[in-house]
Every structure is written in structure tokens, then in C-alpha cells.
Image (spheres, rainbow, N blue to C red):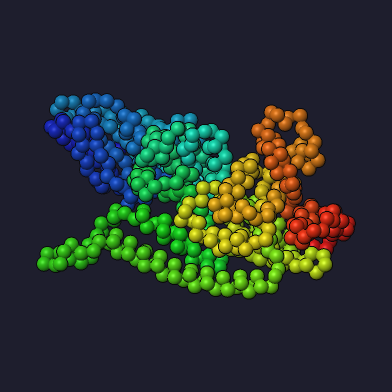
Length: 550
């Protein structure tokens, strides 16, 4: 661990100065840092240039002294866990600076009942452990077990965290964040929530709780910590300084999904614009390597900082992209005008993300728009044509899914979709009834529609994915068969509430075209008959072969 001569040098310095003395060694036994602290603590420098692999160790060991003769403290063990050091050793010397005793702690593999282990060597003059062989074997065991337990490096991995006021709110929001994270192509290794009436102003979670999360992330080999709570620029910087792991919030996660899924030129421009607007207030002058590009002695002042140049370039890029979008919007307005002159009614499919809108469009029109069981699987608007009896054509438009609490800088990415909704003659609101939070999803979409002044539009509520319901719930929603557990199950209370508030809702499975009959009847009745003085029963519009005609 340390030679007796070096141990005595450290203890003599502590005896002479009354301050803690510390050394960081690498695995070749070269001294990388020497630190002189106070009587009760030392400050370890930033170790970012000593990178760690997920589930691995940093390759540095800390050897230091204590002035009061105490063993390894909680702060020492916290540094060991947070910094992923090979080990932490404390030396105890007498008043003359002669080392008398030592204690060494190290991390244990993630499946161990304890987080820390301790070496048997306690006499600085009689050390029997071959430290080089020991730490190499320990690191290999930690990496192997971490990979086996947490699928490290099959994909990027993440720990999810959030602070909430109520437990049921935490469960619902974290389930959605898990779906978003998986849609972004990351494995979710663990979930941590904190129930508090007020979030921490600096770290969102309390510092102690955040420390536990970071240690867990390092144990499992996670690449990211993903917050469900939106992080302000100050909070983002504070959490990033707390840990070397990459930190994302929900807004960044959605932006990342948008960047992956945008296919059209307009979609890519909108996503880049939203990313730049998000990044701009979060730029900081943390890197001083090129902080001043001009000026100096005899110059015209200190010059322009690198941070200022970055901000100016981002603002220029934002202005450039905004002008391109204006031209695209003008062209779309012309195209929409031409389409409207054709006199074809427009039906827009709206709903929460991953409710099955694209799948429904494909089944209705026998098209092949990309769809998947992912949040925001499709971002670009798709329009298809469907022909009703009596040679009546209708344009069916698929739109990007909505989501709760959409940040303002992301709403621009929905602009083209929202413009399409304003031109629609009918909205088909699709909800995933198999999702436990479907009632809140319906309310979120209705809130967005109200914000867009679309409450005057005719709406057909479609409850999708009935094929995924348990038998007792399917009997209730499809046949009004009341299960015995109705009043004991909060889920069934939600089903009862939606049946009472939306008695005209249509229940379908977007994968089964035989369930579309009532939906097609409602669409045709609303577009071609309702309000036109024709009082014909809806059922008389279609014969038994209707499904085959669509």
C-alpha cells in the first residue's frame, strides 16, 4: 500500500503542521497529487482526467493522515464510493511522526451484502498484501459482476430520479419517464424517488439522497442520471459538479428522442432550434483554456471570451434557422390552401404519445407509416385518403403525440401539427386504455386542445388497445359487465369515470380492423349527416361487409 519510509514522511508532516496530509498514487506507485488539508479535512481535486469505465475503478488510491487518531470516517468512505478510488488508507502516527497503525477500505462487488471491505494489514511496517495483484483481481471481479447484473454496455444505461409531493404521482410519472428513457435507446438500471412537499432548490433532491443515487449509479455502471423534474440552469450546473456522470432532465430526453426520430427537413430544423434554445441559457465559462482570444498588454482590452463567442454563434444559428422555418411555413400555407380548395373533409388523429395513432392510421388506410411501441415513434405529420360509400373521400391526418407538461421551447416542434389541427373538420382523440394513467393522458390532451382554442372542434373519443385489458376490465368496458372488484380497484374506478364522462367513446383495438365499425359510422355520421337535416339511424349506413370495404 505504502512504503514505511513514505508513511513516516506523511506522519511527520502532520505532527509538525497539525494538518492532515494526503497523497494520491496511481497503480505504478507514482505520486499524482499531494494535498495539505486542515485539522479535520482535506479537499480532493477534480479527477476528471482519470476516467473510469462503467463498473470499474479509477486507478488511484488515497493515503492520508488524521490529526485526532480516529479511524476512517464517513467522509472518507463517501469519497471512496463517489470517486470510485481503488482504496482509501488512513495512517495514525505518534507525536514524533512515527506511523503506528493504518486502516484501508476498498469497494466490494455490487452483489455483496456490504459496500465496503477492509484489508487485514494494520501495521505500516508489516504489510502482507500484494496490493497490485489484489486491486487488479478486485477490479476484474467488480466489472464482471456489474456487467452480469446490469447489462453494462449493451446500450447506454441510466438511473431515473425524481422528487414529488405524492406517492401515486411519483409512480405514474416515473413509469412514463421509464418509457421515454427506453424510447431514447437506454437501459433503465434503477429508479429512485423522493417524496417531499418542496424540491431542493439546488439539487432537486436532498444532498444525502442525491449522494445515494450517485453511488448507486456508479455501482451499477450507469452512464446517465435522468431527472423527471425540469432542471434550471443553476440546478443543472450544481448536479453536474456533484458527479462526473452525465446528467439529463426530462426536457433533454425528449429533445434527444426528437433528434433521433425527425425525418423531414422541417422536423430536423425544429429540433435543432429547440436544442439551441435549451442550451443557450445553460452555457457556462467552466473551461478556461481559451477564455481570452484577443487583447492582453498593449491591446484594446481583455478581448471577447470564448463563452461570448459561443453564445453569439448560437444566436446567429437560431436566427438563420428561424428564417428557414418562415419560408417552409409559407410553402405549407400555400399547399394547405390548395388542398382546402378541393373541398375534402379532414379528420385529424390526436392523442397522447404511444396511444396507437400511427397504427390506427395504417389499419384504416392500409398504409405503412412507421409505428412502434415507443413514445414519439413518429414525429412527422402523415396524411392519407380513405373512401367512404357514395364516393365520399376523407383525408385522415396522423399527428405527433402530446405529452404532459410540454416545455415551451419544445412547443415549436409541434407547430406544424398544431396548424393542421386548426384546419381539421373532426378530431379523433385516441387514448391507450391499457395504460394505468390513461385518464390523466386524456386530460392532458384536452388541456392542450383548450390552449390551442380547439374546443369548438367536433371530437370522437377512441379508447384503443382493448385487446391488452384483463378479462374483467374488458367485460366492463365492452359489455357493461360490472366486476366484483370494481369498488376496491382504483384502476376500475378510472374506467368507471371515463365511461360516465364519455358515454359515446368508441372502444377499439387498432390491430383488429373488425373493431372499427362503430368508429367509421361515427366519422361518416359526423362529417356527412349530422346537422344536415337527415335523420337516418347510424346503423343503416353500413351493411355486414362494411369492414371489408375499408
